[in-house]
Image (cartoon, rainbow over all chains, first blue to last red; front, side):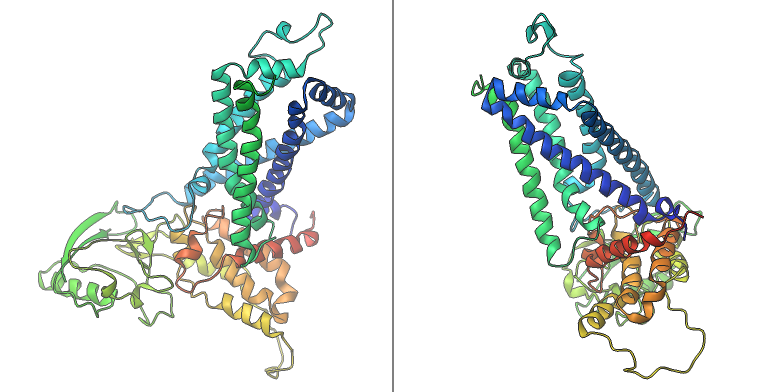
Length: 224
Length: 250
């Protein structure tokens, strides 16, 4: 048995998906926790942003780790999907679905939509290459007011709509992905599986509600 | 009752194949699905036409030979039942029934409804056994096995290797089949010495044979005529995790 079996075995390949997915989902949860400081007001979220940046190299280690997980997840996701399609070259004239869900069947599409959304989100809020003029929310010294940046952005309905779409993809992806990860990591049995499927859905819903509250509450003037 | 059948007809592996319409008349609700097809074939033979070719053997639901996708469901609409044990009382007069072969790259169609399932044999050959070299027959209770473990192993051993899991899987994966074969040995002390090499070899062979990867749709469990649970796939994954420390760089 060689180490390369990890790449040659179906389960080995899936472990890459599950572990990288778990890291990314963990980040999604932590990112939401950080973002909720928005509701505590301007001072809170700006202080949070400043603290994050003060981490310096530690922040970069996290970012690189996440980038690595994202690369693994996307590469293996596309690779495995292509392989699965090749393994089922022809479907049935009469199709009857018994157990699978829309979320499970559309993982590659929700995943790719999510990837496009993440790229936009990074360009928007992290690199600030798209969206509003940076002068609108930064002072003369170039210090960015994160609170103002978010509030001004989400006063524009096209952006609210775009973020809602991105979050819908996130929900769809996680509603299958979370319970699927536990099954792939073997942390599952007959009694746990139905519970995990429901818990995964609830967790995905909670994340959706949490994230959606930011653009929606801002748009409707409840954050100002 | 009278039924309209849409049956997949394919001359050989290289033929394109298509659905062909057949009428099944005066079908008794007490007939099995295969008996209904036997009657249709009798009529076809009398007309001088080629009968519909399909796989069957024991007709008792235990051998795993019959393999038809009926109205999109492997083995048809009745849960935990093989085609041969499916009876026509499950249908009603005037029904349209689609009958197609198992679809997967690893299962090429040989003719009509018969597919080549030897890829599953090669997965078993890769490690789905216990190597016994010498010695007499051991005493029945020489090795004590907890009842729960024996029961779980027997649940996995119920797999008749029909391939319905592959036919049902949107990815054409044989993961439920492999997990049943790994699971029946993993729970028994006799299977432990080769557990790590078995799970690595069988999951690798599965891919080499052209099966897809499991993405947890659980269509396999819903279609399995023996009700094999996807808990065995989780067990297979655990067996693989246990094997990881034994992987060598060269």
